[in-house]
Length: 449
Image 1 (spheres, one colour):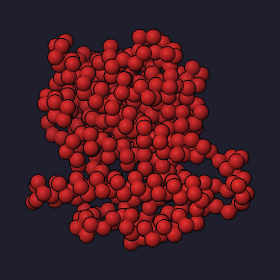
Image 2 (cartoon, rainbow, N blue to C red):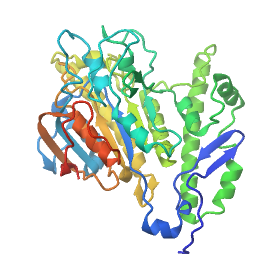
Image 3 (cartoon, rainbow, N blue to C red):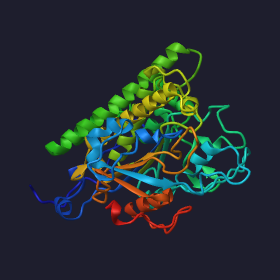
Image 4 (cartoon, one colour):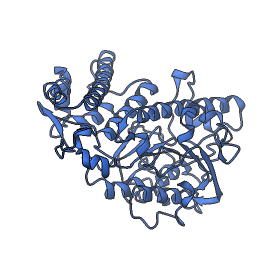
């Protein structure tokens, strides 16, 4: 190896025709001496939220420590068991549970308090109030060097009407991210909008501009192909392969988005939908996960929150033969047929998480993979959806957190240990200075390391 101080700048981008395309971390971006001595990829945070609870007897391992047997809902994640830390016993004691006079709102409180532990104000008006969420606390402190301090993404549309709990604003259902106590962050579910935020012309985000780009069928990559080829000629073999694989991934996502938009145009020719959403849950979820991987790979952000679904939502899963609404099924009243369908849906969700984790594990990042340098939190704000329980919540951390997490274990904490203790511990792993969060009583301690 030739030792040199010459290197590409970490923020090198490809430009062309109004397009700015970020590049992944390449060996050439770090001088060889620095690479050997001090260069370390950043630790990243990924939150994947599932609504309406989990069938906990089909989720929680029977034994603690290492070597636990996976229950059915976790079986799709078998390939990642050695990277998996299952945590039981955590609760949202203050944020989720009803106060006197609150006879509704368990779903609203579950989502709104999930990342803060702060009890949301009961209101149907614009005077919503909750707590600053831990993802936004992280974004403020570690997002200064990134183009986006954080991304907030989801599958369900925030425009779903008639699917909010009585007495509570829909704002509590539509987001789990709160920038301030009164400002929820919108969760973007349109792949085209996310794609163009990441790779498009940041100065041309209006609908008319996007429509012209689609009508011209101009690929973002077409605009930078010449410069990409020229750059690859200056790189070593390993970096050339990284750039080729990365550009292929960007091209694939863009192609799939264009295909979805073409299908939407054919089926509803009079409806202008430049930001088409896939019809199937699988294609939509995979596209959104792929965009998240690209955002991490290019270091455009280090904090992403993704809602697999909104609380109280009526989504059906026709593609796996379940026409009933998911939320209604979770109120199964111990009907065996309904329980079986709920478990089937939750296994289906886990399969999509496995898709995401495999993408992270197969994406090089410094001396390892993206998964090595990430914390992926998978879980939700309810345990038993039938009874609306806010204790013993489903919680699982996957990834290495840059050497700070040891997987392959199930840890059970004492009853009513605050979920916010886990959140506080995660913030510490990100290097974020935070003394308390919601109803936290301290960090979970060295048992995570």
